[in-house]
Length: 118
Image 1: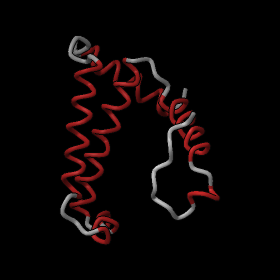
Image 2 (image 1 turned 60 degrees about the horizontal axis):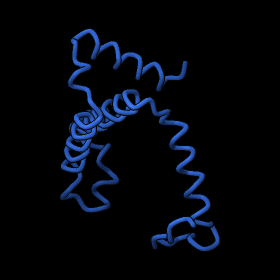
Image 3 (image 1 turned 180 degrees about the vertical axis):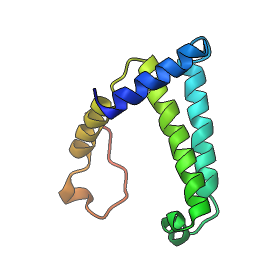
Image 4 (image 1 turned 90 degrees about the vertical axis):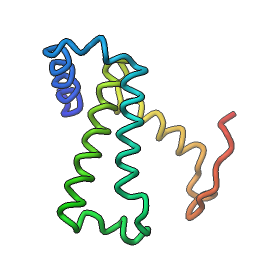
């Protein structure tokens, strides 16, 4: 069992032990995930790019960021589990698509958007 599978299993048991499955619908989990991403963004919102790159040097800010990142990971993992999506497999498939859409030759150093795959 991978670490991600162990986390999903622990979250599944956590929800089950509290009889929270009825609340853990895909819609609710996606909304909670969006809220947590918003809280993560709030930690970085008004920082300059340089300040944001140094955030982990401040122990207090680093603790808040770790906590928000953990919340995002928890809700994403739980949502994927409820939907029976293998996150690692899905991420590899998405990266395969991105490698096709964004060739090294055409996009190295560029932030422009690629056209959709045909």
